Length: 193
Image 1 (cartoon, rainbow, N blue to C red):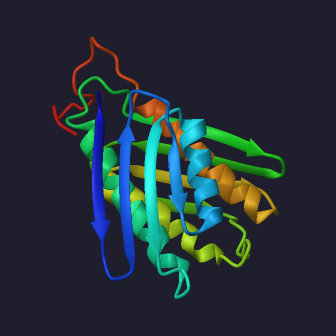
Image 2: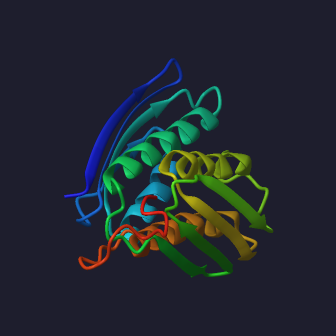
Image 3: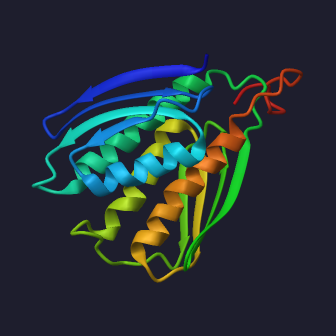
């Protein structure tokens, strides 16, 4: 089984994250920011991967600390679970429509973690959570997961739809990229990711 678990405790957050890339359940996600719990649950459900995340943060100061630190830890456990990448597809992509929203997620589990964020993402709060925190999650996840991650908002006025579609698209693109083909070796001309 490709799985990993870690805990991260700072003066701002206390987080445990676990992933099993080879099963789609159970999903057990609890944070003290309900909107974030909702988005992470959508990512897990639509990505067909078992995530367990328990996270508390000083959201009364700023949700940024919790959202970024969860991204860091999720990226780390994802990277550990992938291991050397033997036989994985490596690349994944998904256009994901959600009502008015249309988001493209394209990724490469390359070992070179970067976020490329483009398009017309809405710059509006959702339930008091500022839109500027969402790229911080994706940036942290990509950096610590060793993933080249492109997220492009191609359409959408409803901020909730756009950001939820982004999480769902990431889940589906990751699911495609982590599929194992037994006859394949490490998918790189270098021989390593």
